[in-house]
Length: 244
Ligand code: ADE
Image (cartoon, rainbow, N blue to C red; front, side, top):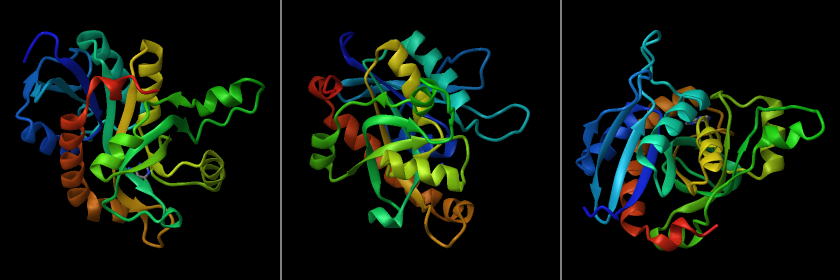
């Protein structure tokens, strides 16, 4: 890998989601921040220098550190250390029957990343709460690879309250998860282009409870996510990074 290889940072929340990717790319574990549980894996993927930064296991609760705060901290530390040309938030997510989505769909992110649980009804702060952090254009990439494109909406909850549902409908989001807007906030502050790759484990408007769908479909979605991440990496070029 040349010194001038483009650097791609992939931020992930769960070890189980990351393992098939680090294995497929034969990435080696590298030193992450000493004061966070993050685990980082680095190596060459074709023409790219790739760092997969996993949020890590919470020392007190012994579960993966999901949610926006660990994702933002991990992203900040990884941008400082790795100086990426592109940040990708990769993981599993929910979607909706009403949009024609099915379990196993792979989505690339739309041109903004929004929050649906930051309700701040004060002038100026309402838009700040939603975020609308920029994402790169992924339509061409998605068409070439046969993936869908949708706005990704983030909160720190797996469920969807009636308030969430209203705000999600208003934003036009098609993908619901728990990290991307936190990652996108940091990428925006640092001026680094941002996108997401999300594989669907559950349908929010299905009668089956979301946690059960998530558990039942995690393994299949994780395999599809790994294939999608590798396919995107092979297809990425300079033009994609800068297409805002
Ligand atoms: N991750 C997977 N499915 C999800 C959902 N429905 N909401 C939030 N995060 C998720």
